[in-house]
Image (tube, rainbow, N blue to C red; front, top):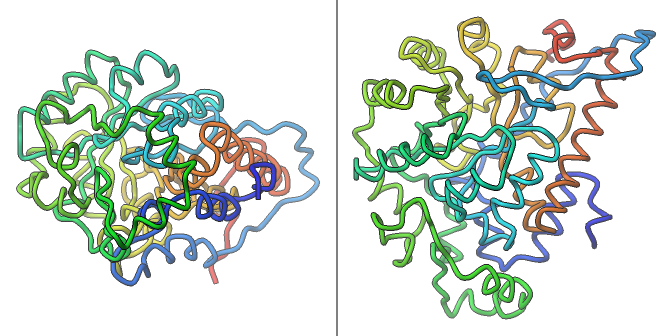
Length: 382
């Protein structure tokens, strides 16, 4: 199987599975507990059907939209995800370049393997920085200040990680950051020598946002769940989020909002946007899917704050359904991480091209010229 054979997110997943050592693939692919929520995130889109209009004379389609003040060319953001150079040596730089090529927003994680300054200098497309609020207030403030100095456009606070989810696949494979080789996992690394060569090629493992503050997860192996449990500020509350909004002074998104009540509070404290998200099913298994929650949240606050549907996106039609319910855009992580692991930057570009092609084709089939033409009347729930 080669890059040219990848016509969907599912194809990229299969190619990534073949190329990655088992612990690393399962880190991308896995979720919490029984992984029901992860599966539901995608299955939820099947709960409704699209109702197309014909003879609409649609020759050209405009996919552009504006999210928290940032004009983007397609309604799909590349959600910030951690550890990308573990999956391919192109890492965040390759993903950012792909986002730039397609004119959309790129997210850099607090646990990213490229620095704020590197991304700022090299990537010229709207950029968000995803902030994990750490117990070490100096580290949190330092990351915000670096983003200010690097002229990032948007700050995103992840609010659903007060503790780490029970990611049992990681427990089974022994996955840690940095990688700790065990007798159980060593064979999988040995039979994927190209991954090892590329891992060494990228100069080893670094978490440049944390250097100088945190050794755990950078030079001391730690599971992601244990990192959340020991390093993040479990006392984080609405007042602290509001203080960060005021200190940042630019558009800020809260990522991990799942209830109408929390969406209203996000408006009250001055957030510019919210990501309706359950962390890709990696935190609280058994929770609702973002798409299932989207309509009631948009109805409650969609006229006062930008609502982004995050998670489960695998097809252009999924995006159209979320936009029809009033989301300003969608975002996703696995949909491009599989592609990054499969083929680096060219893989991410092909994944975005596939989804862009689907969006254009499906918009024409729907009889819609622009995002604003998508309405709840385009959907019927079963």
